[in-house]
Image (spheres, rainbow over the protein chains, first blue to last red):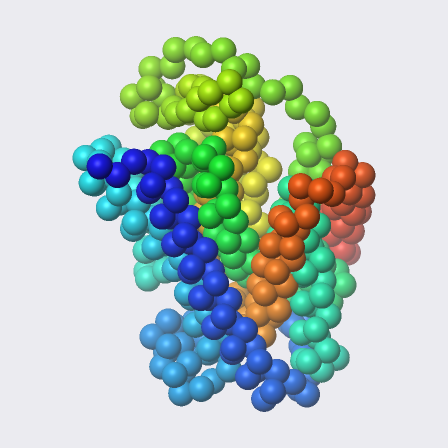
Length: 121
Length: 278
């Protein structure tokens, strides 16, 4: 029998690992970015939005593996965004094992909102 | 300014913001947007995107330490996340539609109000237990450790707290902040939950709330890698350092100074927004 306390502790470890992994990827991409783009001019005064490759996760992943510094950083940011999503998925499973179906339902609603934001919006 | 220098300066500013945010409990995200827009002239949409990313990092990074203390309540957190995530969707949509000046004014007002609330000594929730059928049905209760043993609590005013959480989520999505102060207000003052339960559960909820707006920010091109990189790494490192020294430092004076900084930034945001410079 798993207790609420054990579930909470595992969630804490899951979140910390996700953040550390994301930070490591962002740092790696950041170093490449500074090496390749360091002497260019920084300009954030006007909003242009990001190019398609950095707004579409599948393209970001493709470019990250072909070595684009911006795409590697963006991949790290994606991993960071997915960390709380993983926590919610984990909670669905934990509530299901406790047979608390009211909370399975509530957690699925939260998960649906997160997936809508990431995939459909 | 070239990218190397810009990255170094933004990293240093974010490190300081994360450090002071953790030390004072006000959160680092709240000063990142004014810092980027007012000092570095960054467009508020890029600033809000970078700030939101740092909010997810600090909330998730601190969660492990918080759950170990045994105060956070995952059921209350999950129930209220329904409200905050729907609010966050609305807020992120508003961020993509509203004029940048309007966002600047809302940001300024939120800064000033949150500084006011954090400076005020709030009367703590009445610990006497009242029957609340809705809270009981939704299992919004738990126990927390005290020197005298485990103590039971149960939420009250559930609809009011839920509504306030929707508002907190909207502000989070619109402004790229954690809106931890408003989440704590909803749990501690409206739902009469113990203060420690409110603060730790709030931290727990911030990451999920922010993730709900992050998807929309991503698809609208608010998340710039070159800007988000030094902000995320800086705030994360700063808040981890801040959490280390929290126990020893005397925070009353610091809170006052940081509160004054926040009010000044709030006035500055409103002034610049009205002048059309944001």
